[in-house]
Image (cartoon, rainbow, N blue to C red; front, side, top):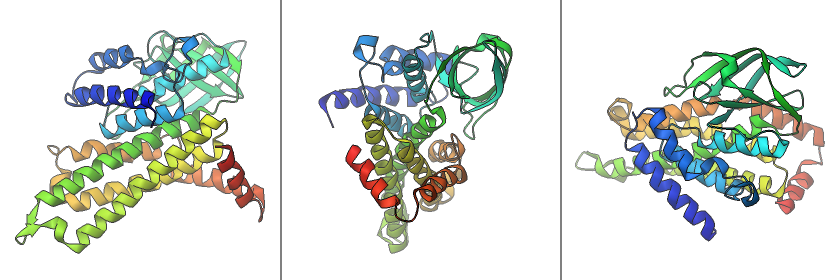
Length: 332
């Protein structure tokens, strides 16, 4: 880890720890602290007024947000700012987020349609979306907002526009894949935190006169859990390296699929170790496992990414997968 990334993650960890201590604080009180820290400009160059960070830095910050169960669109705001800058569109003023799903059309510079399950869509001033080979910049003042929520209660709003002004620019940015990368990082962090909590609980919980961590079945459960968490971290970091090298469509897809699988298994294993106490509202485990359940389906489900990867691999032919993997590994 570079010295710059160490400073970045130390700052993020301190801030997210403070914010996580007040999980019920209104979003209007939480976001100003995050915006002041400058995480929105993480992927922007220093000449653009940004941090000059890379996708590895974004993975590290989003992973910390996941481990602290942070209820704020840190990664979405960073990706939105990066996408607008790369497409040459007007930078956002205030909070910007990204839309995972677009249903509508653009005619004469105006958009009619809906953006579904948009993270913090109702709280944002700007929403960035991709449609028909273009990047769109839309203002939430021009839409009707239908509130929706993730399993843990975070906003996932539907924004409906009728002839709203849309800034558009040709772009090859895949915001769905970028969002999948963010969820991979958050899943990695949440799995690590849930694993640490499970190990601590297993060492504290005494059954039949000894800690349950001494039982072979519990040890095996924790070992499997650790493998799942490590796999997601490895996949996410590999995807970040590929993105920094310039092409990461394959890696983003593989990482999200692996993260989705691990999210389901990890949440189940955490609750197996904790037993009944882990299901109570008073215990903090649910803040992680309910997020894992939601993140698993956001920005592409298991089936979606499995199909995309399957089509990609099938298109390479019987002898094409290994050379492609080797080529991409060399590039990264």
